[in-house]
Image 1: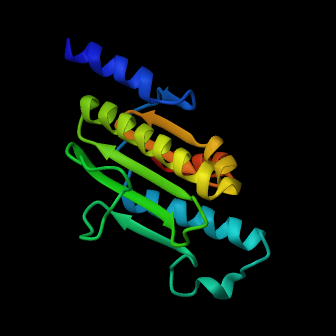
Image 2 (image 1 turned 180 degrees about the vertical axis):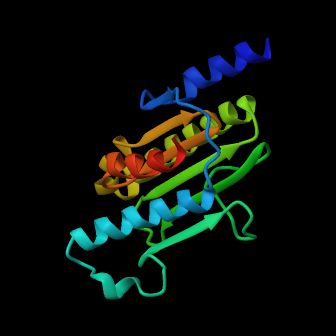
Image 3 (image 1 turned 30 degrees about the horizontal axis):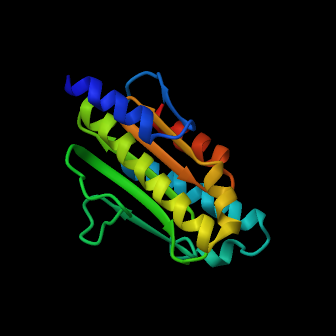
Length: 174
């Protein structure tokens, strides 16, 4: 009965952009996932012409903050329940006028992965409501989001080039 309720909840909460992806199980290092995310952001920032290599000398990405589940200040907006997660990396813009969020959650088991998908679906809905009102130029970015589950990994991407970011992440976790 609980499984039926969960499936119904997922059907109601999740937007059409979420898909489950079947792929071989692999235990990827979340350090490698974080590095892949940062490398893609760096590449995109350099390609934009606003930054060059000299802006990245301290291994930080200008305008972005990366946190891991183990960090004391870890916070994922609208997410209170982090039970069942082995690890997580969340990279967000530090600017209120930029909706970028790249989150990769690594769940303990199938049930926790399903719960993570539902939680990130709620995050997406809340972001969309807020940004359509306050930052309509960012709402387009949110409309082309990616929410996918791959084994025990749940990936949520709101980013200018979500397909490129997805490719970078999947190169590590596949």
